[in-house]
Length: 237
Image (cartoon, rainbow, N blue to C red; front, side):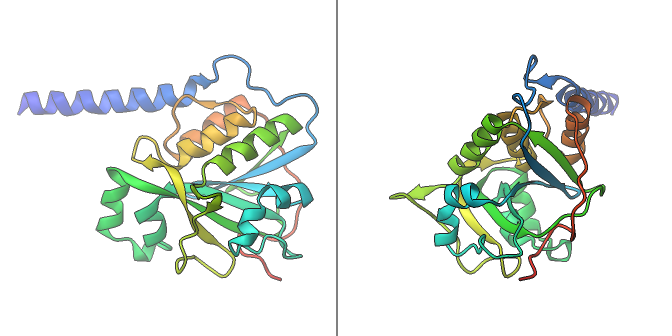
């Protein structure tokens, strides 16, 4: 029994150390500041287990992600202000629209190894400040690099992205097959962190949870608040 308790204690200590180091050790170790002037901004949306990146919609972004329009995402709606991107476990993401629909199968898939999907949604104006949203200023080069990273996350077949029809959380969102395998160590929040590093921001070395990612972002980057309109989420055309 003592051996078992020592083993459990050691596992807990290793886990705590991993989370602490993953949060506090910056990635990249040196540099990572947004380039030059900051004419662009993005938002990071957070819930208890997941983070999304919201990209302001303009003509250049619509051209970059025109394949989403072709796939039925109405990013050109007049009320749409942001394209919202998230990456995650296919079974869990699609199978758990709300906590009340939580099932053992998708949870098991997310904790072991699962195929991945991109979730794309729209948001209108966003009121700031609010606890679940952070705003970051980016330079043009970092913004473009982050968009390239997001675009590369979509699986393509003969140039076309693969939308998963028949599944959505609402009227304006959709799911697409994505590159990479999802697991508990490399999940949705590590994808968000990687995208933000492409943008020139600094994250922790390993951020599997929204809380650790947000702490790292706050520790190594300066966020800003900007008055807006409605809460993040659905678009009201």
